[in-house]
Length: 478
Ligand code: ARG
Picture 1: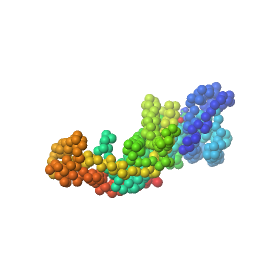
Picture 2: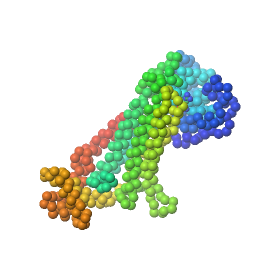
Picture 3: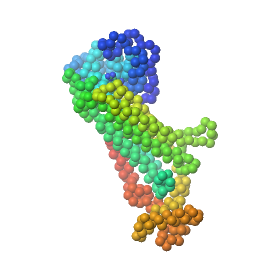
Picture 4: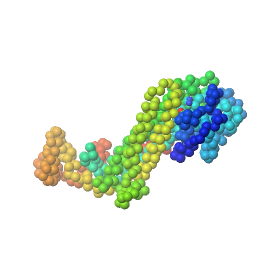
């Protein structure tokens, strides 16, 4: 996707008196400047030009198979489409005032280039089935690429997890230190969340694998078109079953926006942690200079702007989803111009998530962790409190009672500044065995059940994570 495309062809000035629209036959006057200014979608939908050419090519081949175009006419239109593709590619395509959207622009140019044959391009087709087709083609390509970027981020999380060795840090609940976990465990936790996002994208891609081409404006055609043939040529699994549904369905956009919003939420949570981790108060990680920013005034500053923007931009991704759902909810069947509002949120969310994933991936890949700081925080004696209670459970004490016994020791240690370890050692129910649990680095090793945060549970988790990556790569053909 080209970020520069957005405003390149903004228009200004008067509408020429001879301006011709696709619907000029029914109208005596041309479009007013205010109408064009308000209704055009060209500034943002021109990024679908390649998809529009692909859709039109399949349509032209279908018309020829149906006997609606001669071989010469087909050739002439295909040559014109190829020329348009070249003009788009080299940015020499000249848009005119009445090019309302990319579909109109391409059809106008094809007609100029192919002569009378060009006028047959739109037989048995409407912009309604055309735009729905183009947008699915666009989504198919771009969502796969977002998924591939997410897999890269998952890989970086695994690489860092492997490099982290036995480093551990406090695991938190309520942002209060709770129990120590391996850094590897923490990093891979985010990787699992992203794995579900990749899954959701694959699933959404599967569901959107339906061609709307041939639905016409809303009700199909009297001409002998072949939606199966065009669906196949475009690489869709199948054609639509109901023409009204085909042109009014934007579920695939809503689904994409939901998944992208959820990715945004996941990146935001990662971002929030990195903001904390890189603060002097935590000091758990140091960002590479290439992935941090400085301050214009404060010479000492090194700021985690990527992490902050990942957090901040999640609001916009959620907004894009709620905006589209709100647009869709009041629409009667079938096509309504409101549907044009599907594109900007979609393009924006895809663009923003792609940028965010790339930046976060680089930030994590290049960061340096500070194991001393992490382990110092995790070696606080109270972090073994649950293990002390579970030690009592092993000797038959009901957990509720064990919880109260250990809680009492913690309260006393906090009240008079005595060492928890000494109180434990002096308690005959806990004694030396209990005291041993309070030693540095022991609590993390105790986290050994399935899926737990300690080293004993790690090999299986790494294996399962690798299997997840392999399945994703398989599904995406990476
Ligand atoms: N630009 C329009 C869109 O994005 C194309 C479809 C216009 N169809 C119509 N009947 N006016 O939805």
